Image (cartoon, rainbow, N blue to C red; front, side):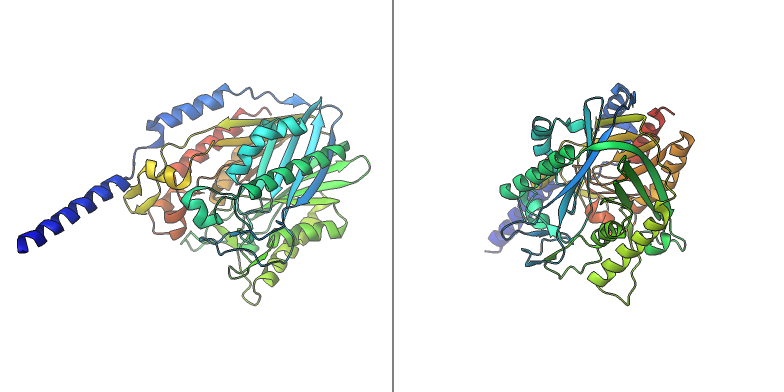
Length: 452
């Protein structure tokens, strides 16, 4: 009898060991420069024709469309999906700006979503040129990163947990509304007098939740691009580095969080006809909370204070005719996925792909005169900003780096955080060690390609 018990224990141990080996493997600690994907990405950058086009007879238009579903839909944000939304505090939208030069259309789309869903980006890749004449490579995608908007746009088990699963009707609705907004923006396009870049430093409204340093590294700049038409109508893009997490996770109402209060305040001020917000380098950066306020009051406080700083700066933005335009997409790989479950242990790449699926990853690059925009498929940390901005300035460029460009691989932060126990990095870095330096190098190389 005792022998049978030991035999059962032994077989159970073997089964557990086999399952463990099947599911998990050690972290790949090799430097990224030693791996094939690195050489492939460098080749992709070198293959790009970085010639900037001369602009001529530029026209621009803008539009937005509501993305509030007609029926119940899950919410996405704050980890595990918290079920269906039960009301609308303030409506969520997709916002589009489209401009044309020399028969070529370019556009920017920002969605009031947690991320820009890869499934929607895939649909746009198939449909947007046919329906709007805008090449997918000329489309710059981003999101407001509100944690209080709809889910239903992510497949596989991980998608069910984080975004309430995959609903074809939600993905088709989002794709359709984006195309409608782009078509309306094109139809409303008017002659453009010029564009301008502005920035103002607002570090007092954010903090770094990863750094343990007494004086943590922050990128506190609010950056914006302003389009002004011949008839004086205008559009204003703003971007900031703080997560849109003011609204309490217990709320089941849809909301744009502080970006909604920011853009609404800008439009009400009369300083711009149309405002949209894109998420900046948000990994590690969060609002610096005013603990006398809660939830929607906190979102209103942050959004209106950022709007006031933008309004104070708006008139000083120098508007110049558009002379240079460019848009590119660079296909990239980050190697095998590495979802960490312990200090030196990850989920096997095949298991990760079963949980999360696969994506087409790329970097988005757009040039508007001497303003360079780069979109990345992740939450990227503002701690990289100072170095990147210095390199851009040396090229006589103003740089805006934006997260959530239609792919998503988790958090990209300085590599020092990978060795620390920071739940944010442990749970959300899906690509392994060294990728902070890798992305910093990629963005630096892109800056270096640009003509002065």
